[in-house]
Length: 259
Image (cartoon, rainbow, N blue to C red):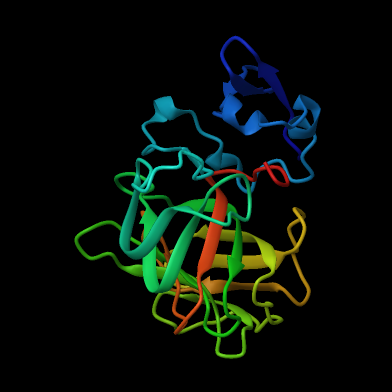
């Protein structure tokens, strides 16, 4: 059943309407960026799982929601973000706004989702790949000290999109090829499992609408991953060319198109 929400301007939160009590759904006003209030209340998919709509007061690790536009102009990593190597945090020319995050060939960086990680989340961002072959890999890793790889989305040597679980025992369907220099929206979902039912899906689109099938969609429902994801690492595996990333949002619920 589709959930319905009402925005409380004083508390800057969306309240979920129930028969007995209003439950705080933890949607801060930052998601209202230039979007009409009505659009947020009219989601086609209210929530991936009802249990994921939780209040911060339940003790779920912060941040419940992570958003980043890289618009500070600083060469330093934004708070909660880290560079392994090859990262330019005020990259130009930007693919959105004034600055983007550039990842040079062989480089990588990541945001920290908070101590203990996430059992399930939704990632939405924009990116442009400098070269189409083996250009990008995003890996979900568990908490320290093991940093267990839980799931990946990548482009193979032919530039085709594919998802896999952390031990590469299962793969989603091989999807269509990405084009170098084209700006895409990336939609990435993960839900940990109990040994053979972890869910991972990814899709690319040149519009804000998320594909759930077709040539730029890949998914699996039989992943081996059993841990929570704490780090979402963006890699540029190409020998040359940049992967440029912008407008990143990570949440425990479906964000509206373009958020």
